[in-house]
Length: 469
Image (cartoon, rainbow, N blue to C red):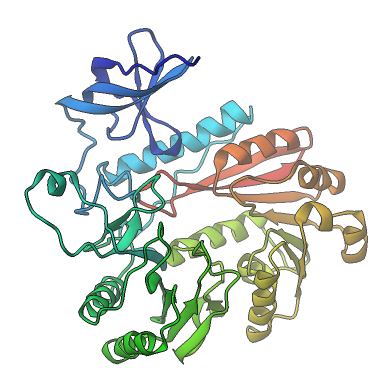
C-alpha cells in the first residue's frame, strides 16, 4: 500500500530563486528543493508542504517572516485566485531577470551549448492590457472566495463570466476587471453578463450540461478592429438575437459579431460552424503595411506589438539579401513567411493545420506577395527528401515549433540538408535546448535573443541563430 503523504512545515525558509512554470525555490533542512507557488525570491517564509517526492517537495508559504524587496503590489483584485498573471507580485525588472536566467540555464544545462554573449531580454513596452485575444466562460455556479464562504451571507446570484479556477474544469471565477486586454474588453464582458442576467438568459452548467450561454471570446487588433464571439449551448433564437442585437447597439464599434451553437460536451469551436450575426466574419491586423485576416479560428500571436518586435529580430537574424530560398517551418498563418518575403528570393511555408494554410494563402494574395508558397501536412512527413527535391535546398530555415519543439525526424532532416543558417524561434527554451544539442555537431549558436511576450507570467520566447561550423 502507498504510504500516506504526510504534510510537513519548514520554518524560516529563504526563497532563493524562480524556477520552471513560475514556481519559486527554497531549500528544506535536508537540502531538498521546495517548489512554492505564492512567494517571491527574497521572501523568508514558513512552508507547508503539499507533495513529497524523492528529490523535492512542493508547498505553499503559510507565514511570511519578511518580504522580498522584489515584491510589488499586484494591480489586479483577482490576483492569487485567478490562474493567470502569477508574477504580478514581482517587479517587472525582476520578472525579466528570471526569464533571461531561465533561457540561459536551459541552453547551457539541457543543451550543453557554448553560447555567445546572450542579448539582454527585450521587455514589453506594455506590461498590462497587451493581449489581443481573451476567452471567458459562463457559469451558473460561480467560485466563492474564502471570505465569502466564511461570511453569513446567502448568495442568490451565482452567475459568473470569467476564468477557470486552476485545476478545476467546472469552477469559474467571476471577473470584475481584467488587466490583460484593453478597452472595450471589460465593458463588453460586463455588459454581456448584466444584460443576460436581467433578461433571464441562462448561464451554462458544465456538470449538468444545461444553460444557454457558454463562452465569450473577444479579439482586438492594433488598428482598432474588434471581434466578439458568443458561444451558446442551447439554440434559443429569440434570446440569442436579443443579446446579440443589444451588443450591436451598445457597441457599434464591433467589427465582427459572431456566434456558435455548440451542444457537445467540450467548448472548443474548431469543429463548429461560426455564424456571422452582423459586420464581417473576420478582423484585420496590420504590420509594416501587411494586412492579416483573422477569423474566429485563426492563430495569431496574442501580443501584437511584441510580435512585431519578435518578427523583426527573426528577420534580422536571418540576414537576408534578397537572393535566398527560405523555408518557414511551422508557419501557422504565414505571418513570419510574409514578413520576411520582401527580403528573400522565395519563401516556402509548411504547417499541419489546413485552416491555417488557407488563411496564409488568402493573406499572401491580399498582400500581393508573389514569392511565397504554402503547403499543409505533418511536418515530419511533409518535410522529406521528395519535398526538398521539388522545392529546392533552402539557404535559410526559420522554425517556430509548438511548445513540444521539433520532432527528431525534422531535426535530422535539417541536418541532412544543412542550410547555412537556421533561425529557431521558441516559446519553450527547454525543448529548444534539447533540439539544439542534436544540432551542435554541425551548427554553432551565434546569437541569442530572449523576448518577453507575456508580462506578469513566467512565459518567455527565445530566438537563436545557428550558423554552420
